[in-house]
Length: 381
Image (cartoon, rainbow, N blue to C red; front, side, top):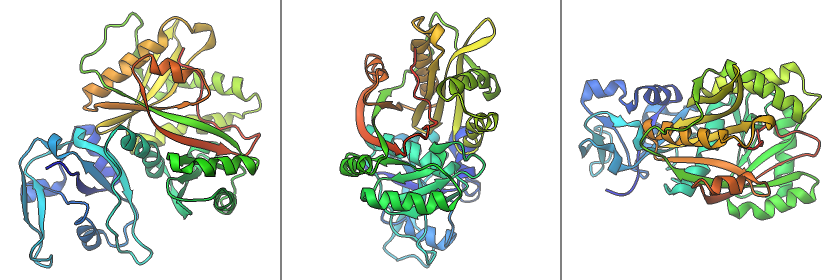
């Protein structure tokens, strides 16, 4: 088998699988196997078991990584007689999951066969961040070409309250949807993430509408299997230890930012911990964090985020140490690929390229002028 297989689950079940390292639902002990489906089949059990459910995920599995016996066997008596489902006879490694897709029903509660993205580096990059934002949201609203995510406790995080567009949408449609949905939720900012090269004209159109538009380059690198032996000591800390450094960074970027907004920008990552494996990597000098990054592990793929070194501590190799540690930690957790976003116009793009990251995809972030993006774009140092 080479085509991906799918497993239906919930965010809580997937988070438990990330913690244990394996997909092993309660049914495994009852029937002896993990229920899987092909993309053509999965709507049938989804409709039967989860009709109308709005909190469902599809785990996209690489059959070669499952590492237990897979048998194609009949489903329930009501299924078509000719339909056999793949059953994995044993726990499925979380590392076999190449993508995690929110799976939403039609207005009538039924499910359609899903569109499975490519499972190459570009496809895995394109899926991860939007999927994370949707899982962390308190609500989402369909819009032209995608969805709007709303994270009600964190209105200061424009990243967690924005339009996620990966289909087809004109700039005028994005503007109208942003006004309708973001404005309807009492949010004063307007922001969208446009994923895919096919949205280049939409990005250009938003610039003509007065939005500030930045092109992003999706980059990817393979993980390393062994723990590095760097000169800088990278520590694994809790979020609280990074707050002072983040507050300094946000105040430097936006002198008018409030204490409440800074608290929300930090706390949003605590919310993400409920749906993805978040690691806080940092380097301290004299007890203070001077460089840090986040590593968000989602099965076989991990996202490197919030990479930053305080200006007075750059040029000391802290960024290199953090990247080496992130690649090693991700590899130890079972991921084989680490992805990140870099601004196309900024110097970190070349910095990451020199450290083995290759460009795999294009996207754009856009918002109205004068509204800070509130997503760390500082340099690794």
